[in-house]
Length: 583
Image 1 (cartoon, one colour):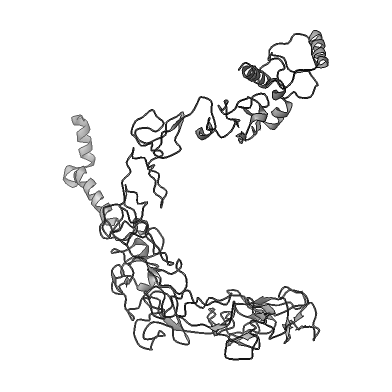
Image 2 (cartoon, helix red, strand yellow):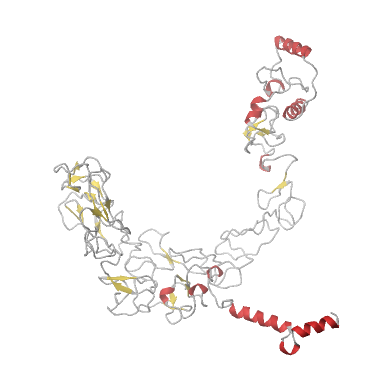
């Protein structure tokens, strides 16, 4: 810079009022670092959970950017990154603490948690059930009283449309009104009796229980209500008499119309009375039985699942709670009913997950980080492959005979690995495929593809029959004829047919139909106007032409004018035939 130019700069930016450029750069860098979300060594959950707009992740050692500004309430936690038996702390949801009834967070073994161990608040003192008349939310949302008209239908309500109005299908006391059907999550709507379709919702048990197209009494369906002793299909049609006590359920238990059970006795205490199942009895399959958590049977009636699990006991903190609901940190799905749930435990060498999304991305048999699988088994560390649970993770090594890929995330580290680090044999020294080869089996030499061969190298001369349409003759073909083909590899549109004159080539269906193969290997086509002469009739030598045919050929040749050699398809077909005939 000249002195004059430098002076001009000094006039605009006086030295006394400007920081050096290096100071400005460092100041900007410091500001950027200060603005970045805190994490690095303190965020203990997988990187994929840090500020990925997947909800507020709690128990991860550092504040998830999805949670917003600190402090945060437990009710804002969407995901719990704590290990089994631990829950986010109410004082600091980024930290995990031992789960305890009354801590305000629904952890393993708890059906609810209202923040205390008394009857106040809606949750039982032992956190195993919500008290009658209360609704308890998941995690840290607490409990509230049931309210008719809040739009949330509970077990004690036939409907709940979110208001206290009469005449709209749902009465102010949350019972359904005649002439309406109240589908789950929808406003009640009028039914249309007589249209041969029963508007009925088995979940809310509202609407028509039959519709036979008329309002005549005595035929099983009167004013779209099934008459006693009759079974009427919900989808319309004639009603049928039912015979309670014959051991046959003449009805539809799934939709709870007609008989819902038939145990052939008059015992009102066995769950089936007068062919009607008791409200708390299950008669969906087999003898009726009452819902009982801990009996080893996952109770459902075909519509409602009363239990999500049943491990044969009524205790909690083992994967299946005292009310037979699923607990996080355990797998109760892959084990049969009546058997203990399996704990999802990092370091046990078993790649497992639970039904709440708590999963292991790897498990190398320890809880140590830096060896490929992080200490929480939540993610595979960069540069490692953990494809064998219980075994140490490994770094990709070219030449070990394994084409390394990440089975969880699909990352491809090596596209081939033939067991060596030499180039020029199909798989390069960096384990990348080389042109002209095909690497099919890991740890095995790549196949040197012959020039012009377009099919898989596994088919070339493999003793699997004559492969046709592969760009050049297969050594398995003892004759270059279409009839000798065992496999047709013409699959690329529009060339989907074998060339009749050269079965190593693919052509379009029209070209195959119009093909004319050379009779004598010359440049001329067969007799104009004659039917196509298949390649195998002449090239393979299947019988000599008759005398009459030879005479016609001579006459045609004598009267024909000389023509120039043709190019394109006919020339290719002729050359191929001549080449084949000369073998």
